[in-house]
Image (cartoon, rainbow, N blue to C red; front, side, top):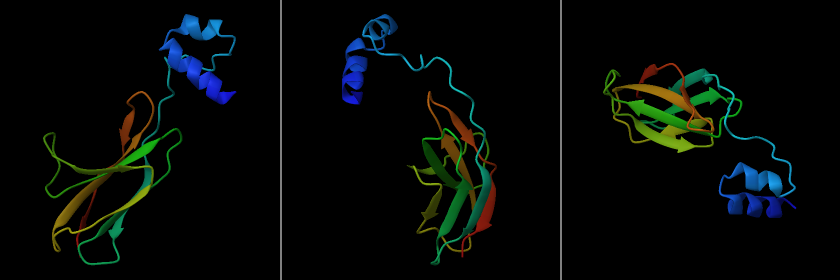
Length: 126
């Protein structure tokens, strides 16, 4: 039954009238998405090896993915972040230069292009 509903949704191509006329209940219209809160309990710690930094956050309700990011310079509006996107709330960045201060943040990614960032923390790479 679920496959049939997915097929009808694809054939309707977003046309609400076609989906309603199919006989299936339309669960949500997709116009409103509840706001997500920012990631909390954000931590930056040493990895197991030299040149590694581990980032972690508490999972965010309604987040689909997490953008784990770091920069090697004090962040400002023009900062270029190195980013790794995954469904995991933790990530280990490797091959970082030892003795360098790294600035990190995590973004929770939700539906409809929602992106909410944690605070920025820094740590010196071991």
